Image (cartoon, rainbow, N blue to C red; front, side, top):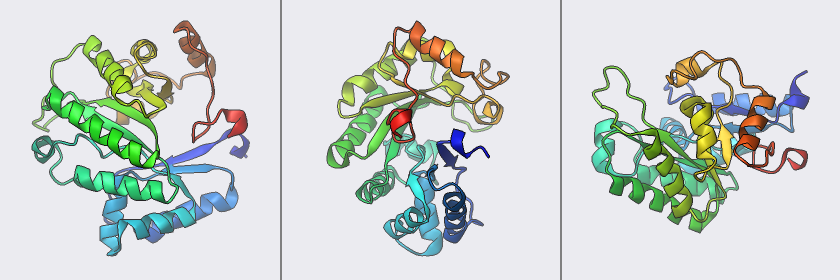
Length: 264
């Protein structure tokens, strides 16, 4: 029985026209019935929007049903970048950023926390990056429902036609620093280890990040194509502690909603 060692279950995978609201409610209910203390983090706002449209109901009704089934918080993702100029080129079929904000607002109003993110390093301008971050800051001022902000660097997909912008690792570290400075109402800036690699993540802790996510490498080959992360085994707890203490920080194992583990 793995339940005593598992604090949360994360479920996300994009939109699927064959999966209904009842399908997800059934999964959540089964998890909570067997392991009632496990936190379920699932479905990004774009997925919620798709499910609601599939069912012919409002996004708030979908969120309410999912919460009753056991949903604890929303997964990050789908925000990409606020600029419509950019979105119509990189993700024209995805829900609008305004819809992403609306679903996040509704979730927060129902007591469902979430994370926010930015996808940068493609065809956006610096000004468009700042616009995106400030819009998220405005919603956080309104709802206080975001746990963390996650800068995500665009990874060029073969055949996508969207090239990665040329930037150095120093530029990427500045993205974390600017996020920390602009998002004065966020407690947590998250660096994803499986996208960034261990050395960059350690440096990000000096540039505004105070949370490390994406720490299991086995699945990384299909998720992130970083050369460093594609072939590594799961990161050990001792490695994490060494990385954090090596950056002069105090390691804290947190729960799903950012309480220290013993309080979660």
